[in-house]
Image 1: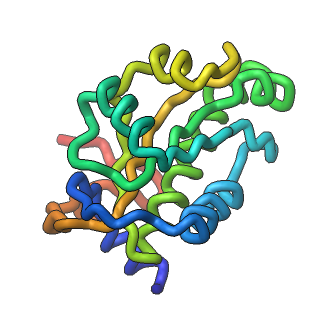
Image 2: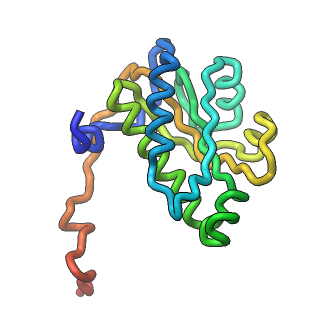
Length: 175
């Protein structure tokens, strides 16, 4: 698949079939995550891949943003200690958020490329997920990415045009 086809074709999917995702496919997707760009190469991220139906059900009770029954979930976490040790406050407060964002995009594009749908979710009980997975204080779950084979794929939504959001050289002053 061409890169732009994946960028333009990927949609947030919330309805999945009951088909499980083979471990090899999940490993491919996670390879895409660890090859993401990272400020000062801190790689201050950790990922928890959840495949167990009971755990997925538990997480769903903590997240009003998850619909349907995903085959797997990825809990995307920031390692605040590592981010601070490598990049100081900037790394902990800003760069680590940018890094997990780029890793999440890689996850979703890699999944789409192999026919697996995804949806990123921020509405979940962070402290509850930390307790559920016994995460140390410095590991913060920030995003959930649901994965599964799509039952249906939403139609593309209208996007703002390049001319509306791109400014060549400098932003023009309005009226």
